[in-house]
Length: 57
Image 1 (spheres, rainbow, N blue to C red):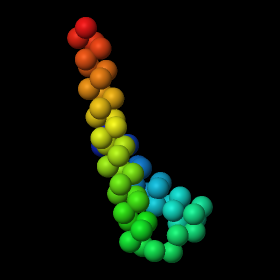
Image 2 (cartoon, rainbow, N blue to C red):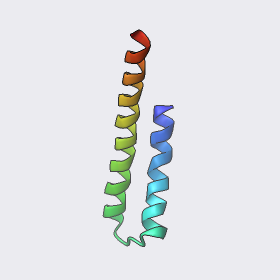
Image 3 (cartoon, helix red, strand yellow):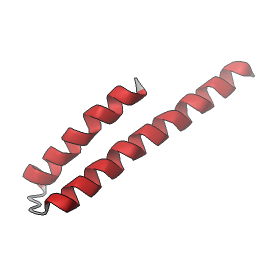
Image 4 (cartoon, one colour):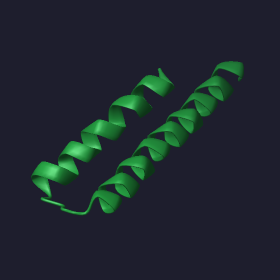
């Protein structure tokens, strides 16, 4: 699930940058999209970790 959300986040953010924010720079779109995808991956991992800790207690 974590990887799927990461894969979906990248093109969604790319499209948001392209069409809603009208960004022209490919490098900027790439960096923003990759950052968002990594952030989703990390946040989901933290959330899963916290969820497992609460199950143990």
